[in-house]
Length: 277
Length: 319
Image (tube, rainbow over all chains, first blue to last red; front, side, top):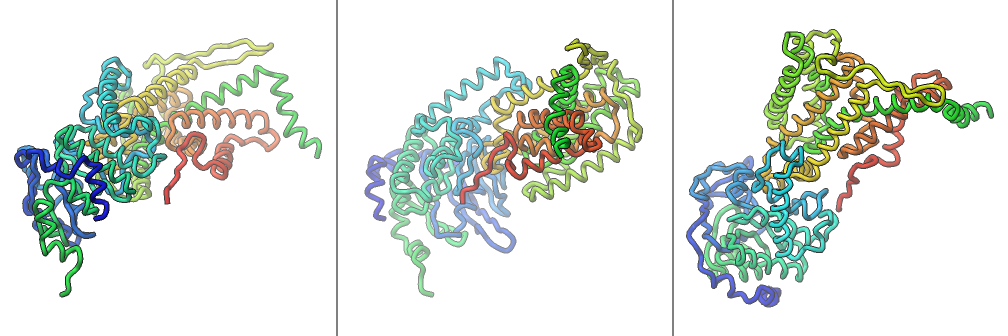
């Protein structure tokens, strides 16, 4: 909690996010259950995400937060329940379908293409936006070259936005952890997603890196209007930047509301601090 | 003793100096067989780079594609139509491999996929023998209008003889390598291929379809196999024995690095040239036969001192 004031300051005041007007519901999770063998990772979870909002998912370790994100972008197929997104109803989608529909994401443990430069990593985010055909590319024809240049411009913009121009030619494997996280965010942004899923974007970062990342999350939300769903452990961060919070515990939803509502909820406090049975 | 040292370290070089035409001829022969090794290695690299699978079936794919081409022509299909149809067959094979082998085995350990390519090898041998018979066939070089005959280049009293088909093979190999290098390094599909090789889940998250990528690399490897089959078939003939020679690609890969396209080419050339030079100048000392084991000795030395090969990516794990 002690980090709260600094972060709020770096983010330009904690009242920035709630000041925006939220749109209608763009994604809803309805009665989703997921189990692995006999273990229930998610049980009848329902919540919705509204346009332009920053929606946090919190909960103790093993609460099913990452599983929820993995269901939302098609990495896991839930046994029961549906996801509504983009006017369609899914019982489980494929990851590249989710990407095509405008869902981008980052991972808890960084998943970058280690052999490639920062620039190439981010360019992969343009994959679905590029239309060139194999033959054109094989012969490196004018059309293919022009398309490459156009997308390169879009990527350079994101590189500037996230303040990483000085490392654009560096292989990502050589970058410090905090910058790798930022490159991962840049790659997801390059997809121009309508919904961005961030799995612990600040995990393992030092204070300064956390403040930077907070600022970027808010700026992405503000500048591009991207709806963001994020998992985070740092309560200070969550309470500062999110509009609404879902709390999971043992795969069940135990609370859902604004940061203030959730903070005062006895069930949530019990889940975090433990309760004498 | 001094005589032995003389014949190992001095005499071969004296011979090279005395007859430069013979040296040039040996180098050329080595270069040509090196390029053929390199082409096979290239097929391996393509699949290894994009899926981490060592495709044991690459050798039989060379034989199978060449047999299909010759077989179709034997049944009265004009040569160029047969060539186009063979490319279609390789595309169908790529789809089949993705659907029947790779997709059900996704997320299995690499050794399982490797074993699956063993299965594919024997399946293709069986299928090839069933359809085309086990006898060696003659490549339809004339129908494909491949050049024949040779150039003789005079040199210090003697001459160097170069088969036109070998020159054509060298040029075609160079074009294929250049095209693949551009594809891999400069384009969307190339980036997607490298992305899949690096991290499946990250590739999926940006909307790259693994299925599509696998079909593309297996098809590309199939086309490279066909080109190799034509070139090699034109020099000797098309038989299942080629499959064994294809295993020479393994030391080439160790030398060049499993993930490097230029590495495959340069590794192939080093092994090809080394073999021929070794056989010609040092062979008599050891009663010949250097050609059959030289490549493996080089590979062994590389494994000891530079296991990632000349151009391979050095794998550094953060602990």
